Length: 148
Ligand SMILES: Nc1nc2c(ncn2[C@@H]2O[C@H](COP(=O)(O)OP(=O)(O)OP(=O)(O)O)[C@@H](O)[C@H]2O)c(=O)[nH]1
Ligand SMILES: [Mg+2]
Image 1: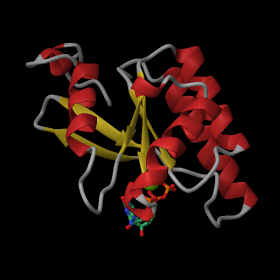
Image 2: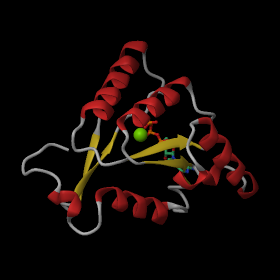
Image 3: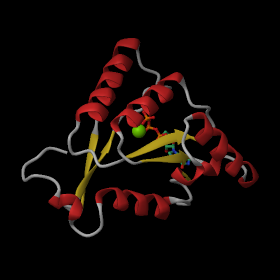
Image 4: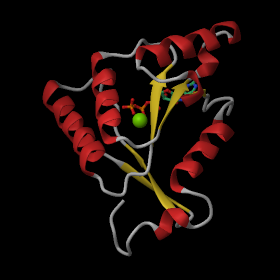
């Protein structure tokens, strides 16, 4: 499913399912893949994407496919390398470079994050607000009654 968060009535944050590593059957996985594919390809109100990649994993074939969809769509993309707390501080920057390089994203479009320690979350928030524009621009761009 997609989880939709209304952010202060200004814009919607839509959490799309990850499917590369989930322990679901092939049919369900293909369903999720189709959902993500259609959302990233067709959603007219999409302003930007935060692409969450687990710090401990090398990007999978599914991840690369998502990267191609995002590149084709042409919206701004920020890579959030997640669960930074799971790795020693000394290895984090190296993982950022490796993962960013693997998905063809420049270092300045990648941010190390941890939901546990909250590191990187302020940067992430700033980037999301930049996608939708400051002030009320995000909601102004969305027609009344339009779906996220
Ligand atoms: N240590 C640590 N654990 C985390 C962090 N973020 C999420 N988790 C945990 O990781 C597990 C999986 O969560 P996510 O990676 O968000 O994955 P998900 O949204 O459930 O699954 P997909 O979206 O399908 O990939 C949960 O148990 C979370 O509590 C983090 O920054 N640090
Ligand atoms: Mg998720």
